[in-house]
Amino acid sequence: MKALFSLLLCIHLTLSAPVYRNDVERQIYCCAPNAEKKIALTFDDGPHPQYTMEILTVLRQYGVKATFFTIGENVQYYPDAFAAIEREGHEIGNHTFSHPHLQTQNAKSLTEELLHTEELLSAEGQKRLRLFRPPEGVCSDTVCRVAAEMGYSIILWTVDTRDWDHTPAKTIVENVMHTVKSGDIILFHDYITSPSPTPDALRQLIPALLRQGYQFVTVSELIG
Image 1 (spheres, rainbow, N blue to C red):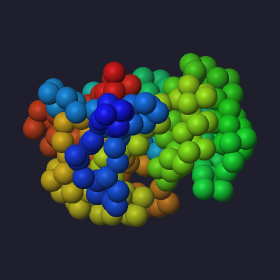
Image 2: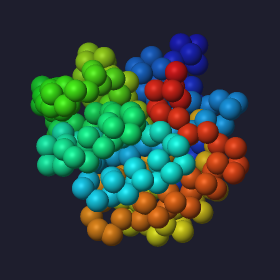
Image 3: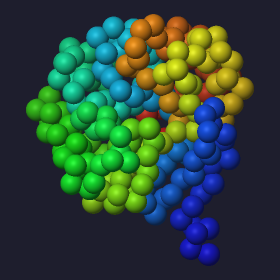
């Protein structure tokens, strides 16, 4: 019976391989089903000096708030882009300092990755981070244990736009519109090797979802 309480099945298929499940006991979330058609846009790997700014322009145009899972190294490289995310009032999450392959990381090295980013963002005026997206969605026992010890909720996703694979914007829009459900967490990236389809996809996708009655909220708002 314990498993019935600790695991809440997310029945939303991803656009990539696995079907993730919420694990409330270990504070792992991929979605938050609700009756209000609330969904969350998330962006990984940034900031980027060009694409982050283009994405912010689209979000501002439609009054949408999103969650950016930033990499510490990229915050160092592009502080102006990171400052723009903060200035626009978007939520910030930890995506490690150097985006390592977590299968090769022990608890000590992962802790250092998270702390390094925390210290950097603290110097930038950010409040204590509470959301962690593990690179590549890796949720090993070590990752889960470190996250719990550091007070993080692990945030996965239910819809992978595959923008990282340079999927055409039109295809991204069609796939998301066909797949999205209330409570979904949608995975985008604001740092992609050129050219990025993400800004153009958002210009089409956001108004289409708004017309269908979806509300865009941050991850913290979504999971409560």
